[in-house]
Length: 128
Image (cartoon, rainbow, N blue to C red):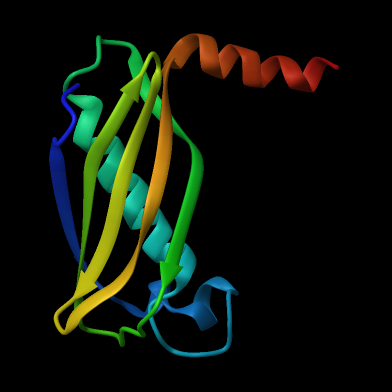
């Protein structure tokens, strides 16, 4: 994985993505949890094609601001840029913009995992 690698995703805000729909507020604008989900999806996609078959990444930290409201119908574009790779940990700069400009930005970390082992370990928690 190269520092500087960038990936971008765009989606149009719909009724299911609003704060009032996801329970993060009572307003009819793009919800912060939905912005974060788009940022994470973008970061995961940024590096997935470089991982061995059977591996993926999971988010372990995100620290973002959400500074501007976006109404239904506007497009939101998220960008994730690899800023560091330390063993299995990958760090990203993330940002989200709507058609009027920046709406959120911050940092995100993901860790490379082997999907089957990860799922098995998670399932073992039910046995305890």
